[in-house]
Length: 442
Image (cartoon, rainbow, N blue to C red; front, side):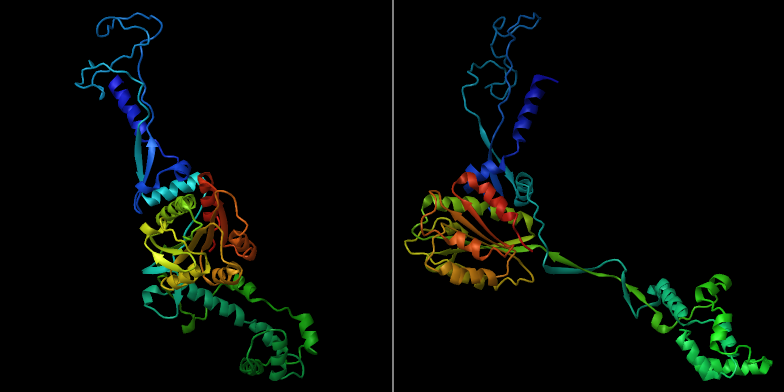
């Protein structure tokens, strides 16, 4: 393989270098991406340079302008760095820094990569039925076209009836020969012995025996009869004589129909809530954005349809567009329950029976007195959701009144779909995302 091919191969390797998602989430520029495309900066690998060996190995090749000196780079004809492609331009290799390019992926690929990198295993469930299709013929009904009659079911039901109702006729005829017994006595004896024979059949048997002139006092009583005559089971008679007939009835008929399979769409609505009060300064806002943005990408990639709603709040709450969500700052106080009340109204548009739901809130854990326990916690209990998550952003450590996260953890410790993640700096973001997405309930 020639030098030109080697260089092209090295360039291809560099272009294919995969991004480090955890590093990107911690430190990367999130602004270059959109909802549909995730644009991740990657540093290209340095291409190798070829130098004349320090050892004089001899050879017939001669460089431009005479024999090359040890350490002198060897020009490669046609290298893209040459002005005219002839390798005559002078240059000082190795003086420039590494180049950066961008690796683009759609949210689905982002979700797959994040699953591998963070060890996640989120398998969304479909809820909304979008189509019904016919599957295999596994359903049984009592009516249908003759072509779908299930003969196996018909035979099994008839055979079951035969085994349940058939009786040893010879055994019952012999019971009629008990001295002093009439048809009613024989019927009662057979019933007690679980022989399913009718009184009419026994009367007919008496008439047949009388016509044949058979002695009707062969056995002194029914105990004497039971000691001397052994009853033959149905299965023994079938093994001896074979299965001559099976009593089929109309109610035994079963017809196979195709199973109706519901195709369900995996769809999700995410309500993102952010504290925009005066205490949420720039660093805290940036941590919220750095945490929520990858979560949005991830869920977009995991679901067939994903909708996102954004709620900002100080003492009151209002809905905003995504473009405003991360930049808003207010001078007001904080009442987190106002945001959850608005989230509950928003989620009325997305029935729990048809939509997966996520409610993500973030702030610095500061809240008005008693609001968390008296209002927020009851609302979180009342709102059906796959996951309620609260992200606490406190870069400098908690202040004395930053108790919301702790109260949520304490009051909702019995719920498996509630999680609190703490982010003090960018380095905490990947672990926070892992914790959130590993807690999703059903």
